Each structure stands twice: as C-alpha cells, then as structure tokens.
Length: 609
Image (cartoon, rainbow, N blue to C red; front, side, top):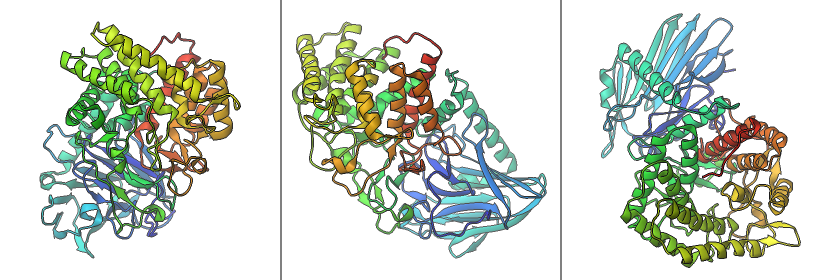
C-alpha cells in the first residue's frame, strides 16, 4: 500500500476518525491526512475541506515516504486520541492526533500531531495547505524556520509550530525529515499561542488530554455486553457537544451526500430540537446527568431566543442557540465524489415540523425528573406551548425527515403531538402544577383516536405513515419507544412485520421509499438510515423477539467503520453515506444496546421515561 495517495478523489467517508476539544472537531483519514476542520468553532468556516474537493480545498497530510506501508488506525483506550500506524517489513511509524481540551473558554482550539518511529527508521513527508472561508480565500503565507503563519484580512491568524524545519512551496508548508527508532517530531496548528510550545509542552498536553477522556469515560455506568461500542458512541456524543453552550451538533460536517453524486447534501453543524429527548435519554442512562442538564439548558435558551412564542419555535438552532441558519451553496467546491451542490446553513430551520413539540416536552420532562424543578414562569411558557399544540395538532407539516415538497399529515408528527400532551400532563401531575387538565386530556385522547382511525389501514392490516395512506416509514418504529402503543400489541406487531418486509435489508432500514413519497421532491433515492436500523432492533427487543433482535443488532454493528463510527446512512453495501459522525446514529445505538442488554439479562424494566 502506498502511504501517500496522490489521487484527486477524496477519501471515502468511512475511512476517517474524528478528534476534537468540545469546541470543534477534525476528521483524520486512515492515511494520516486531516481533510476536514472548521475553526475556531464547529460551525465556523472550514480551514481544511479536501473531503469535499481534494484539488481546491485545504488538507494537512503526514505520512512515511515510499511503498510497502500498511496503515491501521485506533483510539488510545477510552479516549479520543487517535493513533494512525504504518507498518512495513522493517519499520513501524506511530502518529498520535488529538486536540487538547482547553481549561480556558477563551483559548482557541489547536491540533497536535505527534509522530514517532517505534521500530527501524522512516523518512516522512508533511504538507499543510490552508484555505480560509470554505476554500473561498487563499491566505498569505509566511514561513520562519520552524513556524508558519497564514494571514488574511478580517481573518484570525493561524500558526503552525513544528519541531522540524519548514519550507514554503506552491502556497503550502512542507517538510521532509527522517526519524530513527525512538525519535519523534511534533506539529501544532492553531492560533499564535502555539509558537511558544515545545516538546515538554506537547508531552504534557498529550498526558492531560488522555487523562481527561479516560476520567470522563470512568463515569459511564454502562456495563453491558456491548460496552466497547457504547463507550465509543458516548465519546462521539461528547465530541459533538459544546462545553460553552451545552448544545450537541447533529454531526461534525456539512455537504456529505446521502447519495453519491446526488443533491441531498446538507449542513448538520447545528443542534436539532428533535435530538433533544434522544440525547437526554442516552446521557441519563449512561450516568452523565450534568451533560443532560447542560443540554436541557441549551434547549431553554433556544426557546428564549424564540421569545417563548410557540409558533416561532424552530426545528434547529445554531450551536450558540442563535436562530439564523440561512442556507447557501458553495459552487466552487466539486463535492464529495462529485456530489453537488455543497450546502452550508440549513433552510429546514424555517419549516413547520409539529413533532418538535413532543420532543421538547419529552426533554423537559426528563430534565426536570432527574434535575431541578421547573420554575413558575417556565411552567407558564409550557402551558402556552401545550395550548398551541391543542390548536394545531391536526395540521399538515414537513415531517421528521424535513420533506421539501408539499406538507402532509404524517403519523410521526401526530404521534409527537400526543407525546407533548402526555408528557405535559405527567409533568404537571408529578410536580402538582396548575394546568387546564380537562382540555389537555381531551386533546390527548382525540389525537390517540385520530391515529387509530386515520393512520390504520384495515385493508393492509398495519399503520401507515400518512393519513389514509398505504406507505411505511422508519419513524413509525418510535411508536412503542415513546410508549404510544404496547410493543406487543398485535396491531403494532403487524406493522413491525410490514416494515421488515418493506424497508429492511440485511439489518439496514430505510427511512422510506423516496419514489413512493410525494412529499420528497428531490431526485434519487437515498441510503439506509442508521438510527432506524437501531430503532428496529429495540422494537424487536421490546417485543421479546430477543434472538432476532440480537442477530439484527450484530448485523448493524458490523457496518460501523474501523473505529466504531457511524455516518447518517449506509449504501446498499453498508458503506457510510451522509454527514459524519452522526449523533442520532450513536444515540440510537446506545438506546438499543441498553435495552437489549437489560432484556437479555432478565432485568425487569419499569415504565420509562
């Protein structure tokens, strides 16, 4: 295998690891290239985006010269320090990549690359090419011995500090150096502050970063059969979270395709209200109560920024809880394997999606159940919100999958309106709060009757995803998970089997069939949705079909990449599609692993939430 692949094609999505510092993240290929990094925040413009255009966008490559090398990659135990190793007949090279978790909220993120020859010797080549503002701006470059500076008007200066000499060539910083057994070199990329750091500081940063992650993992309460996968999933969630804001990004990237060569290329560097209840469930189950509280606080801040007006509540918010996510296209980027347009921002934030009210109330229910009580003024806002749901629940919307065609009456949206009423009633009773009980209870029952009457197809013998329809949807798998219907109800089991026959293939589950869904106005089918695949496993487990659930779970687990990471979707061969890594995918894994393990152990599971 040639370590330095000069191909103009980007590296496939699945052949990446991720590092981060709870402020931003970077992707590292199996060949030691950092080809995606937004700085200084996760939702800031990119400095490296070769993943989307290997010719025009920047990257930071580091690898041994010559042929005959085999690369492997893993994380140091219970951490987000990524090691890429190259092995040849006579030499072993180890590259540790990480981002130190800064003690100060004002300290800008940096990447540390520490390369060592563990056996034999090797000549290594480093090349660092930065392109500011999503590769729309080429900065001025200045190199002084072991330091490089990239500068541009109205842009933060970026600095590379190295333990080896640097040179400038064709607008990039390069270095070629030879290390013998036991020798190492380092590179630190970040703000101007990195210029003062030397070998001892690098060793301290490495030690402190490893200790931080291992101490955080030590708080994890999961001790089940799939601990390694659950630990990795929890580490992914932590990487996608913001210490400063409490938010959790849907994914670390923008523009990665749900269909290679297609147009379904969105920006997921934002926080979805939809993910809120899933996130709180997962964090609470794993023992991370503080993170769940912080996420609940972010949700409340989002509501404040929407002026507590129910009709102004958005599907998603910026990671700092801001409300503006204007969508733009980047026509200068070729896209991942030609998948265009590459988009930043997300126009779906302006859509009407009724399910967010249920997810919001479910989150509030969880955070108040395991945390502080709800203040009086906060409860008044809840009353306004639930009264609003009472007024609009019987309305069409864009649905959970953010359809860009004509609005429809979706079962999942109706289900989550029921959840909003159900959780509000439970919260009010639990906290002895005043509420318009009779109205809320009446609407809760009306929604239940509507679902059983208008979303049940008697001819087909199962629920359908749209009113008076015949179609199926992976989001229907959440009906028993949100406790709307018993997981063993014969009508639900008939629906589960219909989903199995229509949407499931080799353990992978589609969200829906695009060609049979008029509300999906985009061209082409998409892949199989990872979260739906794990929801399917949990539904089987809740139905006491444990052997089938376990087999299906293992089928999905083998489609993780070499590091246990998942994107949003799979292609028919199980390869990663969509933005990466995806929070919802890992949240669904945690939930399925937790529930299936409990059932297999024979533990009695009480009603949750």
